[in-house]
Amino acid sequence: MIYKLLRSAEWAALQADGETAGAPIDVADGYVHFSTAEQVRETATKHFAGADGLMLLAYDEATITGELRWEPSRGGALFPHLYAPLRLADMVWAKPLPLGNNGHDFPDDLT
Image 1: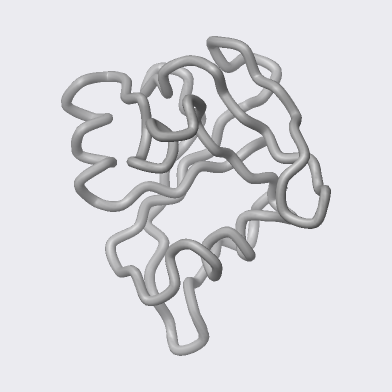
Image 2 (image 1 turned 180 degrees about the vertical axis):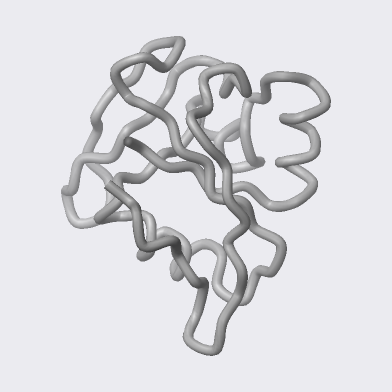
């Protein structure tokens, strides 16, 4: 599984339209940024610190529609980047990502 964090307005747009080019940073970079289970907590801390109303979306990298490339990013780690619109139909699940006392509270079942 790979994971995407969306703000509430971005999540609403994905639900309404069925697909999106992503968040403003995704549009600017020309691809949708994803994180692995090992990376997503750091992504939340670095890019969404203090943000309430986030949604955590899970996608299966083996069945996602579009070209998925694993490219170096933070510290040379490989991150999944989708060179296609993010599609609601490809999503495996979505869960709210509440803001707790020590950052965001992630589900225990990330794989």
